[in-house]
Length: 253
Image (cartoon, rainbow, N blue to C red):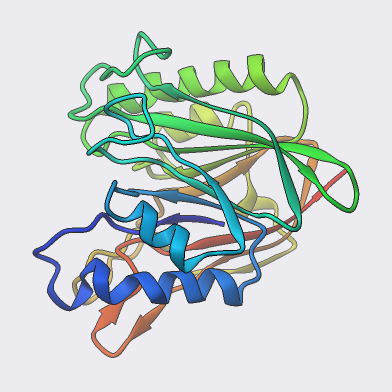
């Protein structure tokens, strides 16, 4: 699963974090999700997610400090403890200096990619998950960040099964999307079954904006996609987030 859960904004009213956090945890639990890449996880949200998701361990690194505690966004990975074992992990920054906290190109904020190498408990097979959130304003930053990510994937995963997920703030007709899909595959495009609207970004407003796909789960050719879904979760006048959660059913070849 990939899920931008919207940062804890005090001005969100009935869509505020305090009204959505249990909903998010319940949704993940109901889907019986093995692994989730969350975006926009702030320092106050992380311990609450840990408490609400006791069956999961996690990787968490804020983008500002390079240390476990920080004020800026983390792209946290939560994985089910009984099904997956963490073998290795790390975080790099989407900038000219990816090994240290930094801001790249025309981005406004520090942006990062957090990754983990996992082993499936039953099969013993391993895979990598990379989780990111690209700049919401800078096309130059998004394009260059995607190059940093693909270079890191090549050097870290070395051809093993890879999932790259996140909020890319870029549409399917953009240079950034075209660059990423020159190396990886959009799982929505090759899934045997798809259950999803034509948008993933859905601000807390009505009506929703169509043709606004900006969140993706990319894979390499070592994986097969059985199903892809993007769920428009809403209750009366509230939404689970301002992005749809994406789910894929993957099999290692």
